[in-house]
Length: 207
Image 1 (cartoon, one colour):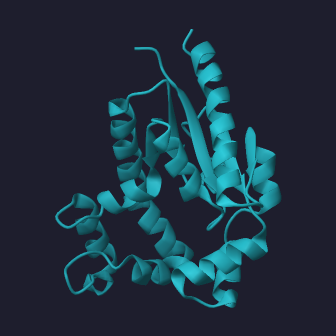
Image 2 (spheres, one colour; image 1 turned 60 degrees about the vertical axis):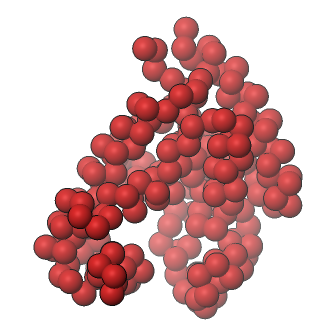
């Protein structure tokens, strides 16, 4: 089977990536979401959760035996060695499961939603996409959405943004830049236009 066009969907936290991914899915485009896969590979009973417990201890578990992701995130946020250990456990599992889901997907092109795609490229890691689609949003809007969504403080939201790639770094890596400065309806229409373009690119890519 000819390899399909792979679109890497990314952007800063609370930039609108989920809305974009949902619209692609509504258009019958297969979307493989790295965050969803990351949760699946550490579900109860998985080798991923076993490895995390061996490295970080039972303190990262919630009362029902599932992984308390926020507690783990707080644990590794300011500790580069711990973060590296967690990535060494998770990244191979996530990569394998994403490939499995991609292989099962049906469509002329596939969207791989990878929040930290730009950060991994800046670290020199190889990625598995043919084009990079970056959702670009104003940082003030991202902070406001993040505070509403997660209930944290603006200062915490600023710290999360500061730990990610900058808007300029993302734009420099983008093949397609999708501005999210208007309404959700505007964003969805922009995805519709991109979809038509990607269908044309996918047809050429498969030949």
